[in-house]
Length: 160
Length: 160
Image 1 (cartoon, chains in turn red, blue):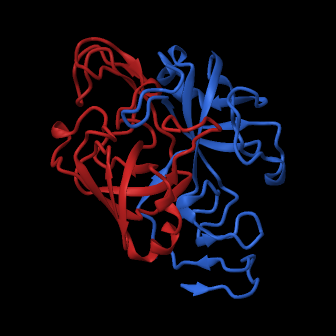
Image 2 (image 1 turned 180 degrees about the vertical axis):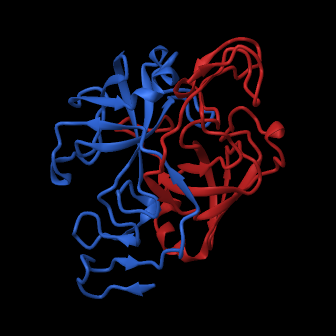
C-alpha cells in the first residue's frame, strides 16, 4: 500500500490505497432497484432522514415478492444496497476534502472493500413488489441486496 | 416457485422455495474472520447481546488494518458478515418449526438471497487487526465483509 502524498488516480491528500485480494470469495444477486430523487452522487444527502426525507421506492424483483410476507408489520426496515459506482481500494479517506482523515471502517463512505450500504428507513406502505419508504440517501437506480426487519444486534429499536 | 406441501429437500411445512436468478451480479471479498464460542449453528443464540453476550473477536485481514483508524471512537459498531452455511432460495420460512410462516425479508434468518448478516456490537477494544466485541451470534469462523460506525439511517444512536 502506498501513502498518497499528492493527488493521483483520484486520491486526495493523505489518503491510503490498499492492495485488494487477488480474487473474490462470494457473490451477490441484485434483487431489485431503489428509486430516489437523486440523479448523481453529488445530489445525495450525507445521510437519509427516515422522518423528513423524500419519499423513495424500492422495486423488488417480482420473483422475490413472496418474501415480503409480514414485512408490513414493521415501522422501520433495514435496507442493504450495493454502491456500484464506488472504488473499493481506499483504506484511509479524506471525506470532506479538508485534510481530516479517517479509516474506511470509521466512515459510511461508499468507498470500501465491499460497497454495501445500510440505511434504516421508515416503511410507508407495500404494494405488490414496491415498497414506499423515507430515509434513503443513494443515487436513483442503486441495486438492492437485502431487506431486514429493524431489530439489529439484540438492541431494542430506538422507536420502541 | 413451488409451494412445499410436504417436507422435501430440507423444506418444512408451508415454506416456499423461489427460483434464483441465472447469474450473480457482483462479488464480495471476505476481509477477515469472526471468532465466537459457537461451533455449530444450533449453539448460536437467536440474536447477539451487545451488553451481556460472550466476548468475541473479529480478526481483520492484515491488509485492511489502516482502515480501522478512528473506529475506536465508537462504542458500538455495525458488523456485516457472510452466512456461508445457508441456502439462499427460500422466500417463506417456518423459522420455529411450528407452522408460523414468515417472509424471508421479515426475518433475520441466514437463509436469504444474499446471506449477509448484520449485528450491532459493543466494541471493547482494538489491538492491531483484532477487534474485541460483545453481541455476535454467528458460528465461529464466519467470514467478515464490513465494519461500519454505528449511526444508521439518520437515526441518532440509541446510546447517545
